[in-house]
Amino acid sequence: MPAADHFLGFIDVLASALDDHDTTAADLAARLHLSRFHLDRLVSSAGGEPPAALRRRVLLERAAYRLLSTELTILDVAVEAGYGSHEAFTRAFTRAYGVGPGRYRTRPTRLRLDGPSNVHFHPPGSLRLPAQKKVTSMDLLTKMVEHHIWLVGEMVERASRLDDERLDAVIELSVDEDRQTIRSLLSRLVGQMGMWNAAMANRPYDWSVEEHESVDSLRRRLAEEGQTFLAHVVETTERGRLDDTFVDALCEPAEVFTYGGMIAHVLTFAAHRRTLVALALDAAGISDLGWGDPMRWVAQSAS
Image 1: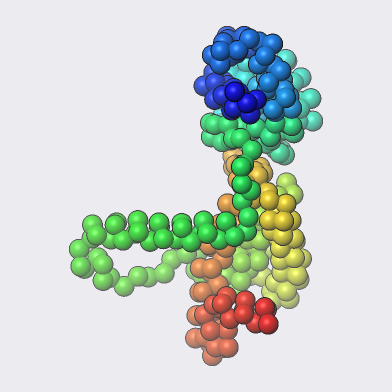
Image 2: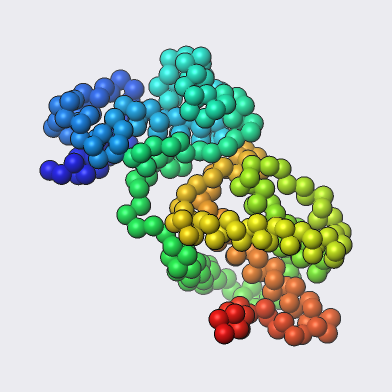
């Protein structure tokens, strides 16, 4: 059997035994009908790191996620990761992440640790192998269309549960639990990019800037935040990192997102807000933008 197949088999048995800390490397090897020596050699050859090192790293990545996503004590997280004491876990965690678990919980950075095998813990509870095919910008667009078709289908199914009176009732718009204006929507459109720029840079976002923001401030912020966000998207797509994760420390508690998911989120909510602004501008007598349909803009950019 090729080393790559043994490596995949090892990842399967590792995932199933991740919480069984009494399971030894020899036990894992036996499940694959290998000796401990041959397992070490095959996994190191195919993945670039010994089985024990890979397991410790994955458990530390999961521990980092638990610190962010649960209210477990540090000792509870340490025990779950296979450490016998708070001190031993703190030493290992600090070596791996550069800060202790207590500080990481309040000011998180990355979730994934560098590893030659590129096998990582994937929230909420699985292991992720290196992608056989990198997600591209075209893949992302395809996923968004697939999501759109799925979501419309789900909405149609749910609409079938309603009577005619409910189906034909006029919808009164309510967004973000606030009264929407052209000013507030534009401020949020710029602020959405600023917020995610801040999350990716692990710095706080100043929400107060969106309180009755001036047009001059909108121009200044868009010039900065728009270009910064675009640079993130270009770098992420060019490097094939859409499936990579980052920690959003602005959430309470902190959450882990993929870059691709974040970009899709921004595009989805921005499309709704842009449409509202376009309609409001049209009602105010400014109609040259129409609905803000991207098709014409793309065609003009390509010419």
